[in-house]
Amino acid sequence: MALRRGLVPAIAIAVAAMTDAFAQFAPQVAKPPCWDDFMPLRDEAQKRATAISVAGKRKADSKEICELFGRFAEAEAKVIQFIEANGQWCGIPPEALSQMKRSQSKANEMRKSVCAMLPNPPKRMRIAAFSPDFAGW
Image 1 (cartoon, rainbow, N blue to C red):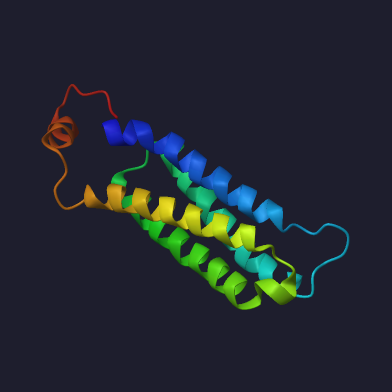
Image 2 (spheres, rainbow, N blue to C red; image 1 turned 120 degrees about the vertical axis):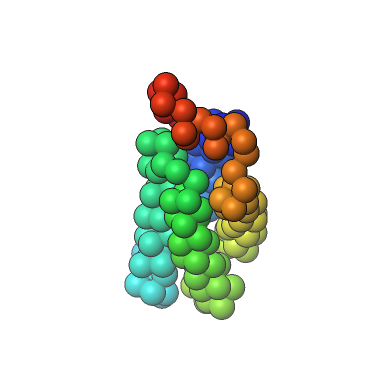
């Protein structure tokens, strides 16, 4: 239950950090040479980050959030891989890559915390799930 309460703010922070990192290399005047290749990767990662946030706000179960974090991690890894390979000629500042890697590290920590709950949920959650008079969590 405590993890669930802390999950929504943590997700919001991760999404905000990722959005800030993306904003660092938004087009200033003209599109960078790699813009058409990069934007679909960035958009997909943002879409998946938003899905985690929405699931947290509607109090989705840990299994769903764990799966969403997995999908987000895949998309974020593709963005980072693209930036590592093309960042210099694409005009993406090294600071943006550093920030993305920090964001990825935080997201992976949250993913591990959420997914660790699946095989052996705490007793309190197990009892709450089967209590007929429990209003929900």
